[in-house]
Image 1 (spheres, helix red, strand yellow):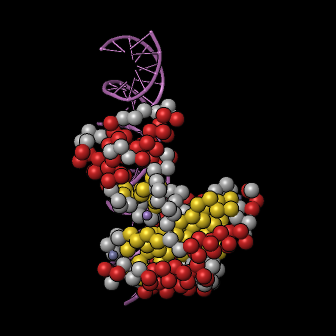
Image 2 (cartoon, each protein chain N blue to C red):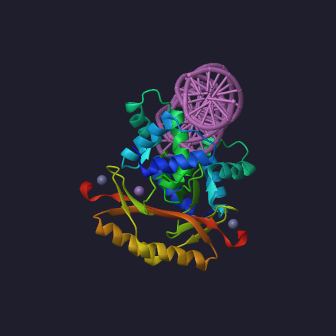
Image 3 (cartoon, each protein chain N blue to C red):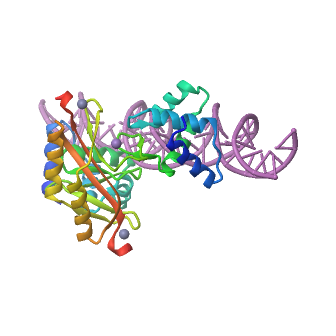
Length: 142
Length: 142
DNA sequence: CCGTTAAATGAAACCCATTATCAATAGAAC
DNA sequence: GTTCTATTGATAATGGGTTTCATTTAACGG
Ligand SMILES: [Mn+2]
Ligand SMILES: [Mn+2]
Ligand SMILES: [Zn+2]
Ligand SMILES: [Zn+2]
């Protein structure tokens, strides 16, 4: 309940003359309770299970807020809807996506990261963000 | 005009009981003449400059055909529209995208590719495709 | 060359995730 | 409480992409 993440959101909110609301707390709670790569619609279902009157637009707006405040990162695996994952206290990682069952495996390969910087520098390019998505078949779907 | 690519398209078309049309030839020509990472709307403008009566839907349909026949690959840099590039006789590569001017730099780093396979194998994951996008600032926009 | 047949076309309607609008509601500060 | 504004939910709008459908046209045989 009184999570460190709620503090982060409250800080962001007060620093921007926004307001803490019942709905925003509900969306944050549902987001934090869910350890998956969740879509807005997914989260809408989770939120309305606890707070039936919350609107879908509010979920979208709160997800933007969570992203801006550094609590969530926005992901796009190219399937037509964005997904969100925890960002607070979570290091960078990339994703393997099983095209059979939808399972997502996270990984981080320091050398891949290093060589990315290397090839960028070689081209005079300054990286601000990157994403590496690998699609295929997971071990359970072979 | 009588390109190897036209042969590839004609082969695909005859093998699938489809038909070569004036519009398909026009879309293919515009696509081949353009060396950029082009959106459907971009290509529509290029095509209609030469063949004003071609419809946007036909451009979309022909792009699907080019993708299926191996002449084009579909790219998604997350900006809300798909882009297409030459695939025939073009090796795999990844992209750096300048968020300032839109410039796209292609690169291929064999070790990055190798470590991707490695980390996938370590997780029992079989890669069927992958994409690595690096966003940032190019040398001319620094 | 026709005639036949099925694929292709263009215009317009539709789809669907996401965003914008707006009148009503409710935090926050005094 | 009162006031001031941000927020909300319902709904409309947006925009890239796809589907529909009546009409056109490529392909094939005769
Ligand atoms: Mn993740
Ligand atoms: Mn490319
Ligand atoms: Zn799987
Ligand atoms: Zn640039």
